[in-house]
Length: 219
Figure 1: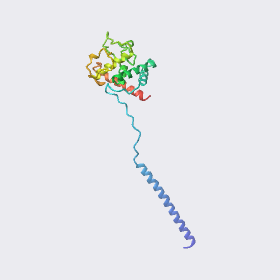
Figure 2: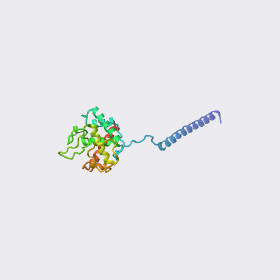
Figure 3: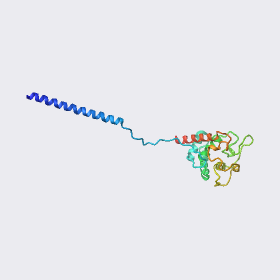
Figure 4: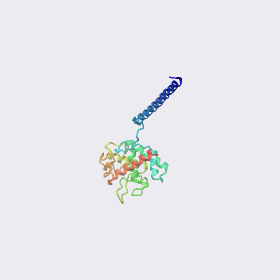
């Protein structure tokens, strides 16, 4: 083989090896891409946010602080003054804690019974009756209490006697406590047909609770 032929063969061999390397690299990239495509994704570490569950038992701890309760009240009824709403909500938290009653439930019941403090029914604001206690119809508007705190305390005590036969921690101010079989309705659902004749009474309280939690966790 002459010198020119040798050089030609050498160049051909180098060209062949170069193409093989490039082809091999491309195949390697394709294989890696295929593996990446079919490889299962790692599990997500972000926890799922579940909807807040409405409590069932009347006894227990509330989840909302007084400012959240006040904000919820004023969002529905802007005519309620901010300072009053916050003080009023704090009374619910304090009084309920003393008797072991869930203040979220008691506050939601108040919102239902008074139309978020708009009243408009038999019970009037000056009565300090926030749960329709003793209000049975025309001519019988219900009980009166000297202050807002005593009115809230009476409601809490009335809820407690429905929930349990445990003794009160504070002096009795609920004038209708003796009319309730102690422990006869320990859950929200059992208030329907007992606290009120309205069979949807419990569902109405639970709907307000749902609104309370949704309002607090989205603001």
